[in-house]
Image (tube, rainbow, N blue to C red; front, top):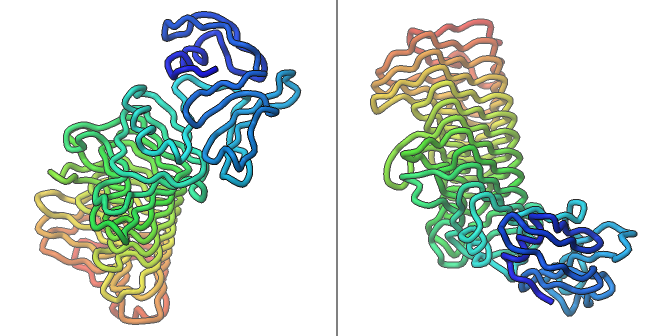
Length: 428
């Protein structure tokens, strides 16, 4: 017996709760009358690759590659199991007490991008898509409000940009004009396939109050994650426990879009790893970013600085470990220009190591830098003639401070190159 998606959603959203037993009858919240189903000694086909039924009826893994089976025992003596066949064995994947929530879908690589997009188009907002292990190849997956896409772990589930696609992997509708709210992507590798693509960002869109957790962003033809500015608010995004590796552009780019230059504010970037990106690990265009407890290693290989703060207020970088091996690069750049001042920036309690031009480079490019605090950092180098802080430009530096920092090895007598307007105190 098989059931279509609409009937299936009705079954799991009303009185009929799917457990290791039988279904009750009733009326679901979609207004579809629930038909009394047999006990789970019968196999039910939920989607082309998804089955429910007794464990005794599950075929050998070699005959069911790419399918998910939710196996149960009619007497409820064992918990429900959800398993995926990789062609050789049955792999266990997550299940919560045998209960399926409304708006929750399970896909395998054989379902592909087309099935993901169909589910989003038909059931968003507030839909959860769970992805089994494997590689899903495609492009231009467009998410909407409340869409969550959860993989089986970044070492298990990969969304890969198709060869020659030369476009974005995951995006939002018309980023320049509207945002999407409360999205989540988690436990996924985003692979840019840069050997066969010249353009495209892994995730590009205008997001508000969205979450990016435990994901790998790697080998993008352009940026790993571009939080694009929009005519709508694009605040309050959170990036946590992700890796940004070998991208040809920036690891994370915040602000602007492909049409205009609006800023993106209130972004939390916490406990992430950035390595070998051609551009900055993080490019900030907007206010109140908090960049904390992250590792930055060999970024800005072709251009920029490891962290680039561009026309921002109330932003802080703290507890990070940054390594740069280019004598013409700075670890952090803070810039005011284009009629916008830069103010209330804190660079504190970081470790700056390697060979570099400056720990922090400040540029008042015709506009002012105010209340820049650089304190409690350790700067270590055994090569070149770097500066702890290099301040340039014809703007005004007001109430800026370089205090309580430790500078070691080859800084020499010109460890600071600062104009008037700076407080310098208690450095070692």
